[in-house]
Length: 111
Ligand code: SF4
Ligand code: F3S
Image (cartoon, rainbow, N blue to C red; front, side, top):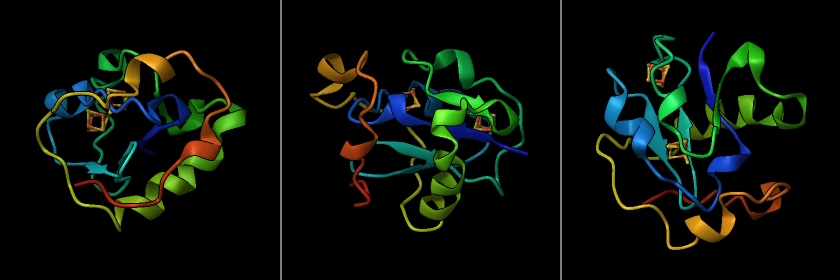
């Protein structure tokens, strides 16, 4: 079991989650983060830090976002690790309440 970043993170990337994680399990894509399920110790402290409620325990991921379980696993292996928070994306305000933005997901790694 692990925690999973889901759709609300897309085009926001607030990164408050990174600063509280006791282990290094966040990886950065161009417009969202993912959690490495192999590294996550299931502490759950990141959940309440996310201003857009993007993070769920794997067994509580809303059904509409089930594909993010595999997506986190896949891209955690491809994207660079992020260990410190940074400024949110410029698009964060515009996208923070938007649903149905999974099509905007970018598979490019973060910089
Ligand atoms: Fe890190 Fe804990 Fe969140 Fe897992 S549940 S990503 S270990 S803060
Ligand atoms: Fe994304 Fe929320 Fe973290 S928007 S970067 S999961 S704080």
